[in-house]
Length: 144
Image 1 (tube, rainbow, N blue to C red):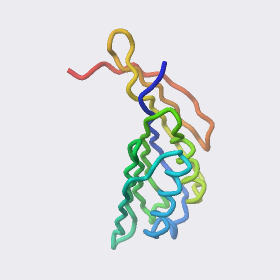
Image 2: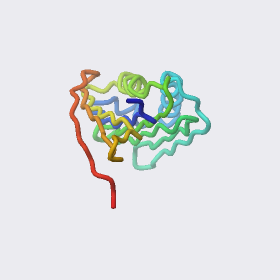
Image 3: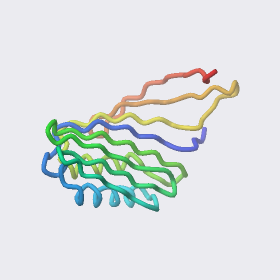
Image 4: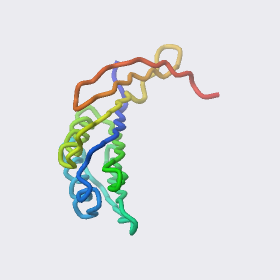
């Protein structure tokens, strides 16, 4: 069954703290991740927190990529949602994990916009450690 999009949520641990603190580097990596996902960047914004850490967002023609970093914990949270048949959000996530030097990656991928005949949305989730996806299945009822 076709999906309307894929949503990747990732936890990156053991990252290079210096890279996580560098606003210009984070911006460059987000834009390159968009390119590697076969997505078109429309706008971007990054913010450098004085006490450490960076938040960044790229608006895509196909949706978005965001990151929030905590250099003091060598941790980054990544959220990538893309729609369209030819986008590769997992590839963007793997690129970011590699370039930020993550020693551990936990990635969950949700197929979005898929409903079964009853109108319920079926989410296929998988956790990945450096790309080895272990699928699970969760049928979530529609909101009332």
